Image (cartoon, rainbow, N blue to C red):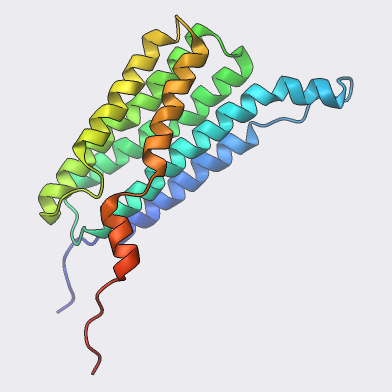
Length: 201
């Protein structure tokens, strides 16, 4: 009889596809300046968008990398996991909108506050998804809940900070990215020791 378990293969493939589309949409928003503008002026005008795009790309990439770590321990999905994963993908899909808002309206208190809200939004669904997967797989997270909580607090703190200094607010979001760029201890240990392979017949 075929295995009737709900394996995470389709969930992972669908998530990879959606995240790839999100990144593609962001890069399509990068427009070449008009011919009437000199090259130097054009680069200066597009530089803020390039920096915000880079930050958005890194943010999306961090979720993709950690999504891979998270699903690595999962052998069977549940109804709650499927919907939590969809909530995560929906919240990530808003990042191109916020990135483009900053590109069109410029780095202002409202645009950066909106960007901070959109960056914080995936953190809620991520905590829900990771909690459900931990209960399902009965294994601890590769990254601790403390790191998730600290990142979410920085995102939330960046919202009011945008009205004090938009650049400090963006710096707080950059700080979250730095936290997550470092690989979890569990992943480092697996990289050094290598996966355990069953004996061959």
